[in-house]
Amino acid sequence: MSLAPAVKHTKPLVGDNLTILLYGSTGSGKTAQIGELAEYYYAKYKKRTRLYTADRGGYVTINPYIKYGIIDPIPMFGDNPFSWVDHAVKGDKLVDGKWVPGVDPDIALYAFEGFTSIADAMMGWMANASARGINIGGGGSFSFNAGEGADKMKIGSSNMAHYSVAQSQAFEKSVQSQNLPGTILWTAGDKRGEDDANGGVIGPQISGKALTGEAPRWFKITARLITEIMPGQEPKHVMLTDAHMEMQGKGMAKGISNSRVPLAGADVAPIPSRIEPASLVQLLQLLESRQTAAEETIKRRLGLQ
Picture (cartoon, rainbow, N blue to C red):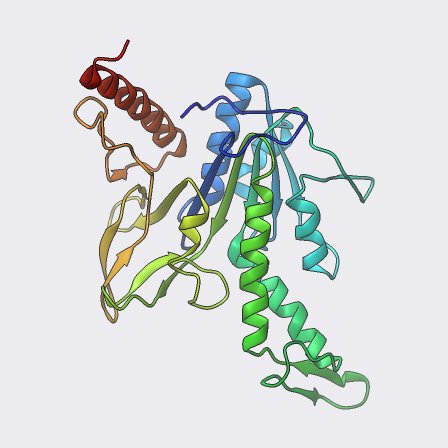
């Protein structure tokens, strides 16, 4: 794996870009990791980062990168999240408040924050549509009037079809974004889903539990971020790079992480199951070393020149 961004003016070949999913609870450092990788790419290649964000918590942790033009943020705006994300995954940029199509050759990293917020925004839009009398999927949703007179408002609910729409759109748009050149990074909150074999699975949160264990299959690298808090000590931000078990309220749950590490080369370039403090750049450098070690090991084992 090479860290060099495959920045091109045309659509890259399949497998020509790097796709990453980072997930973790609020405060685990997802946005900070975007900043770290953005700095690395700018320092090494003088390439910038485009951040499409639906997270309402903002991006205070990366404000210095925004100030110096290293990261170009495009927050979700308007009343149609479906339209916003459709432009975002195409790499469109904003000029004077209007979308302008075309991939910028000076962008090395496209970051999307994140699965959870985008799906929630879609769910909210569909609930509002129910309030306006628009039936999406049929049955299960309802609307009612709240307040009286000038304060009267129409409130709508969601149904199972809304969850299905939000989940399928999240999947389709994340896949579509992978047509962009360079590095594609998505973030998500974490959630416990169902797994009959282990009693539970911890994975990215995307409107309900159905895709909690599935989303990592859509990316080449999936890593979980956690914050460990001990009394009297500074919080520790940790990146988990491999599958792990964790005690939850309902028993043990399997946490999903997958760095897709080659089997060969483990003795030369081992990959730790946790990186502390969390560092996406360090993980990518370790994976690059492992790939090189695997190639050399296989070549030597087979007597190849």
